[in-house]
Image (cartoon, rainbow, N blue to C red; front, side):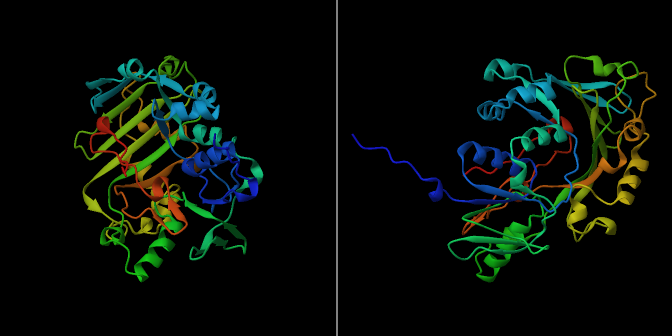
Length: 358
């Protein structure tokens, strides 16, 4: 019988993860379970609880079970079964039943605020392995090691580099610069990131259920409204902790990019990601605060959601639609928004996640 070999701890590769978002933290949690050394560097000095809500089901809950954190999801999340679409006059257009998924997969669907899921994953990472305020400037990926340098003079060395740093990933930028010089970068990967939707996202503070009875429902209420001119749509999702997550989407009449979009305040790469300038956020809030909500007595509007949300946690982002052909090179690999981008279709009732299959 062949003997079983054991890998020594010193032989295990060290992983450097750039980005402390959901993708970077999930990978860190997995590496932690496998006892593989790693470090996470994040450009933000403080990770703000930005974003709206996510829905999780049979594709991800089994992984959370293996990590031993599914019960935390069940406590922080709220099961949901239906997706309702309304007209701007508050008439029900469509009711989509997702409860059949439980019978087919054995798992319920859960809605959870993105910040709450981020917090769950962050608790799985020892604090000394997450380094905030580390903006990456230089990446050396040419030898038998990778080295990452940041603006404050810090340096991180490992065997594998993971770019989990968002749509405008610095890891991808440096990787593509190198491949372009070697004439190995496909033409499609040299194009700008296209987007046809601009999104305002946030969530309210915990609300009084007597003022908002919709919060008393044991099932998360997942409601979308289509604007009369189809230029706007807005979504609201109730949570288990008494808040309402919301999204307002402006659907452009043509595909734009960072250089072609006519709002100069949002052309820089950082402003196209979470946490846009306060002026741009306020302008979109002012423009859309009269949009009616599908629940209540008819007097509630999106303005009631904005006024009950922390203003510094409201974000305006562009939702890019692109899957990159090149997602690894040398010792560097891209994951999450670094290699694929989530997008919402024009009709939010048909929202989807595009993933590459290899």
